[in-house]
Image 1 (cartoon, rainbow, N blue to C red):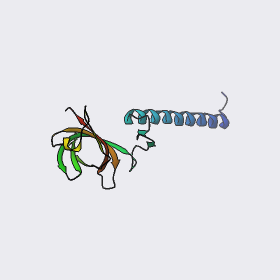
Image 2: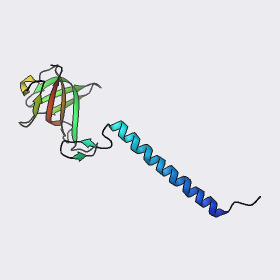
Image 3: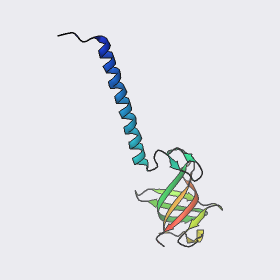
Image 4: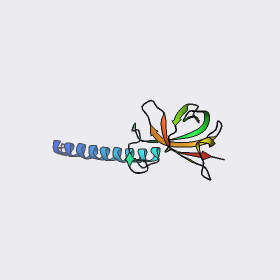
Length: 131
């Protein structure tokens, strides 16, 4: 039996390393696409932002638990709450056109907006669900 040449061993190691690297890239690409739902990107209306970017568009879905001066607090399905800031540019949607006066405690809403540094969200659009 002939001994295995070191050159063949090195070539095999390179081939296996390259195959493992490629497989890992394919796995990560598939895993990120299916877990984010956005094929690796988050839709922001005009541009694409990083999924976890501090100033990316953030959707919030839940039930209004409180209303305040230009704010609503939305209770999320996981039990936590998110404060939503309303501006003059915030659009409130229902099956028919809505307004901020339609945002009452107990109403189910989906809010989309920009995440602020304090964790609240400045709403760009609020849709009332199930009116």
